Length: 328
Image (cartoon, rainbow, N blue to C red):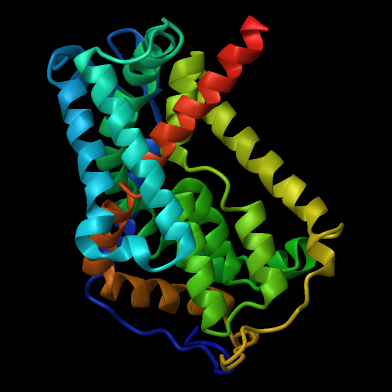
């Protein structure tokens, strides 16, 4: 943080209207229930439901195009061979593409077309995710990309260390991972760790405790289980429970046994409390984010597609195991 070790001074910026307006729009889309047509839900769910009701015939092919793009992009960009993990994920994406083609065009093993397998998976989950990802990514960018999380993160510094044993800046990761994309949260954590701003233990706590699930996928689960009429209760209880469990797991094995060392070859940058007004420091940090907001917006939208195909094949696997268990 630029305020570390320095007395905070207020910096002026003509673009801070974005902080207020865009953050408000993002929060409204995700957290304010609205009644439309007798249905009480958040606006994001209303938008997705309207599209599903008015474009039924096109959506399976639209979703398949997304799966195709997600499966081929690693090979086009060359990222599939960067690591063993990338190779494995790229392999699963190809499997997901094959399964998606079979479901859309109606051929393949009979078990795949059981009512609680392929049809349910595609209609209730894949299509919904295919709509929620691009739409949700835009509003998530407004919520987390214009300084709100940085502002909250600085204010949370006195809380993060004693409760979760992580630096104050990890509040940004914690909320961004939960509210935004957990995969993006993992990437952020890994990058910050390699920059020497997290120790190995702190990075492990953040990755295993906070980077668990994204808000957009929580919408999918809520829609599938019929919980959208109690979305706020569902979301906030899940968030609170996650943070409570993380506070416990940081104090037990194996997290408490991980070395508290910085990444080898990095320059350690331990966090120091900002002097002066914490509110001023938070405001200045938010301004720095607003200045970078165009690139952050684009990045959030692109990263929104990151797990689409992987999640698809994971759902296939999960439902397959569940069905086999039920048959037994």
